[in-house]
Length: 384
Ligand SMILES: *Cc1c(COP(=O)(O)O)cnc(C)c1O
Image (cartoon, rainbow, N blue to C red; front, side):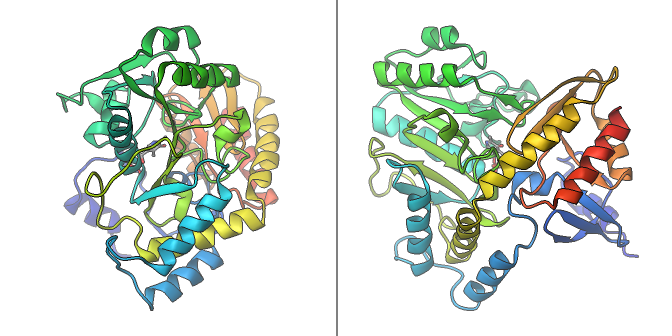
């Protein structure tokens, strides 16, 4: 067998803590390694495969578009781009009818920060502790964890961090200089912390009162993960701008910023070469089409409740708390999570961490009920 692991080790920068499994194939919630071993995949490409691996509608859309047109400068119109933009605007709540298309979550956050400064003429941002918004310098400046920030300063100026779910702290931090408040509805990388609805609506009111924009990062929570197409819909929020990526395009690299009419933009102030390319737009159209047709958010809601009920019943000294929203589930442990990820993999289940001591499960929302049951059994065996 070819040693692909060593090949990667030899030629890739050592930026990731690797898991020692070489994946070669995927179908819905299952992936296979080089030796033919099957795993139930609750990593799902780090949350990019809400619709499962290689969904037939996405595969077919990519196949067709790849044979027709792959590249198209944003200075020209494109049929595939127009159709996706229309579908996205149609699926989003009213008032978010325009978008900027890019290639990743960090790029969506960068665009959000630039558009907020450009729109308001203000420079400052309020973000949450434990927030994760990406690795580029702007997105990193909005990210709280020193693990990601240290060694890269000076970062972008003007960012203030307040405790998550603390309205009083937000009231003290949002001023006439605040361009925007940037928040995740469920903090993903920060440990699967769910926002309090009253705090969110309080922050939204605060933004309106002080002329700051409400910027919601749905890169991980978006596209049905939390039981709605977008998590902010659960709380009746009307954000000025929403950052999207991860599961937007059936696993292909894409990001987007959904904008209300409050957001100002004009030629030459922002852009990207690959953003909105026909290939990713075709994949995204196909993916969103399936999500809306099958009301995929309902599956996330139902399966998430089932999984959390089962995991919540685990007794023993290891588990501190089970929490989440929809099928975005975190199990906080009283000890380090790493060894348990390896034990779960040995049981045939791939899961990911969210910080040092939270086990995170992000299965495809299309996961078979039986497979979800197997995931619960494996976690029970390993943690119980
Ligand atoms: C993953 C993530 C990002 C960054 O996305 P990339 O595509 O890795 O740049 C930003 N915000 C949130 C909430 C994320 O989960």
